[in-house]
Image (cartoon, rainbow, N blue to C red; front, side, top):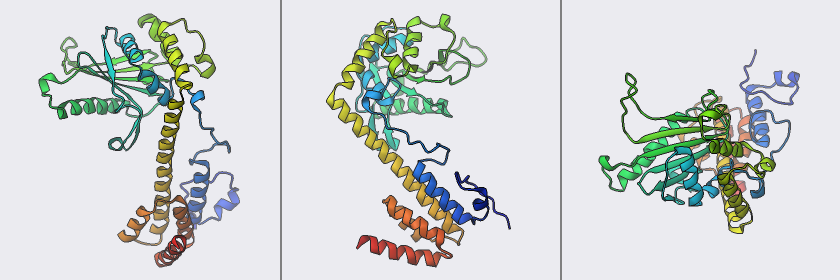
Length: 336
């Protein structure tokens, strides 16, 4: 009788894998994945957590902190958009915060200028699917916030969503991709809905088509730590470098960064909890229909150690009844 494995058991000899029943294979894989943090090959290397001193502007925390300085934010927006902005207000309540509405840490920048135009800027270092839909979500959030504050449709603010990408989002080798709504049949007919989405790419090659200061800024974004401290022959980049030096010597900013790291760590921990619950349920479903009450009990467990212990029980159990009795005994002993 052959088995079909959904997991690749890394560093386990083929002869051993072939003899493993699916529940044991799943259990071994789950434990291995927990130890290395993901189901992919890592070569056994543990990624060192960055300190504040290790960050460059493409790290979300440092980008948000630098752009929270309103002169930096205003001059960045002027460079990208090509029109003057007299004043910009950065909303610190909506930037780099833990927000339950977004189910986690929100790391984008939110600002408004003197004309009531709203801006959302986000740094992207890894290519993700559905960036277009992500931009639509940000536009809708800004519109909904305006409506909730009592505005009507006629006075809705113009909204700009800007992604700074350390990759080419559309593989056309452009430094800047700008999207506005217009008539497909006649490009001269504009919708005039006040929304604009811009993707900046550090992988552009059309320097002659964009301002030189934008190219210098994007070269600064993609630079590594040592390179980012060099001279880019650019006034805005020099200004941002000075802000970065100030941030890295600011004790309060160091504490904020540590707080953010803890929030992100908690999110990863929650992901591990959820993955372990799913593995337990998958093992139990091999034994029969899992009662809703048992599912609820697993959902209530918040200690990874408890869930890992139950995962072991689930791997060894030959019936749901055996698992439930073993789980009840374990939980009683752990609480006493």
